[in-house]
Length: 327
Image (cartoon, rainbow, N blue to C red; front, side, top):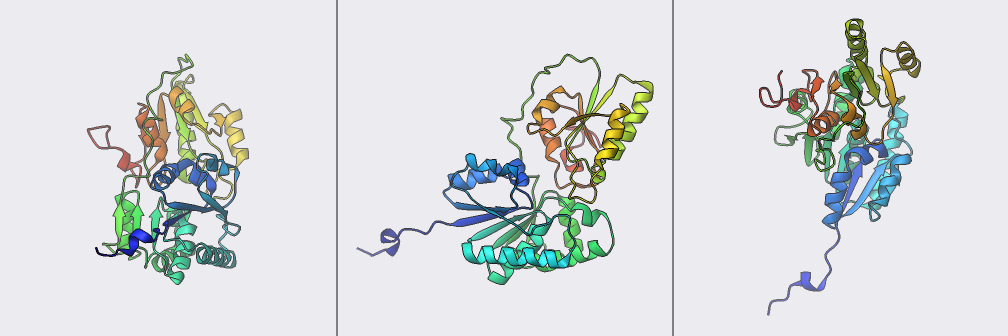
C-alpha cells in the first residue's frame, strides 16, 4: 500500500479576495461570482468601502467583508492614493489570499501594485476605462503609466469588450497572451424576463437608466427630449438613477431639477430594482461616450425592450448587426 499524505491531511481551503471601489458595485454586479465561489467552497473576502449595500452579506453569511478607509474615487491626490496602496498591502499581507480579483480603476492600479509587492496572484478586470481615459491630459497619461506597472505581473487581465482590450495592447499596458475579452459581467435571465406593463399609458416613453453623468450621454438624452417634445409633446423622457457626486462627470442636481421643472424630463429617482422602470418603458436609451459592457442594455434586451445606444466601445458590442439590431 502506497502512503498518500493528502488522505491524512485536510486540504487547505483556498481564499479568493474581491476588491472594488464601492460595495454598491459588489451588490449590483458581483453577486453572481460570489454565488459561484461560495458554492465551490472557497473562502471569499470582499474588500470595498463601507456603504448601505453591505446588506448583500445577508445572502452570503460566509463571506468576510473588509471595509476600505482610504479609497477616495474622486481624489487625484497621490498621497491619498499611496495610503490606499498601503492599506491594501496590509490587508493582503494579513489575509494571505490565494488569488485576488480587482475591479474598477483604483482597485486595479493600487491593488495590483500591492499584490505584486507581496507576490500574490491577481486578476485585473477592466470594466470600463472611466473618466481619466475619456478626458485626455496629465491625469490620463499618469493613469496609463500606473496601469502599465500595476498590470505587468497580473495572471490575467480581463476586458468586457474587445475595443478596450485592443487599446490596452496598443498602448503596451498589457501583453497579448495576458489579456482576454469577455462579453460583460453577465445578467440573470431568470430575473430579467419580459413583463407586462402595469400602467396603461398611451404616451411613448424613452427611458435613461444609470448614473447621471455627462459621460453617459445625459445631456444628449435631454437635448433629444427637447427636439422630440417640440413636435410630439406627449412623448415622455424618463430618467432613473442619481448623480454620482464622487465622479468628475456627475451632472449637478440643480441642473437636473431645472430640466425636471421645465418638464423636459421626468426624474423617477434612484431605483433598487430597475425592472420596474424597464417594464414601463417603450425604449431604453444609453447615449454613452464609452462603456465596458453596459449591463442596463443587456437587462433591457432580456426584458424584450428596444434600445438606442451609441456606436462606441462597449455599447456597440450589445448589437449584432442584422440579428438583434442595426448599426
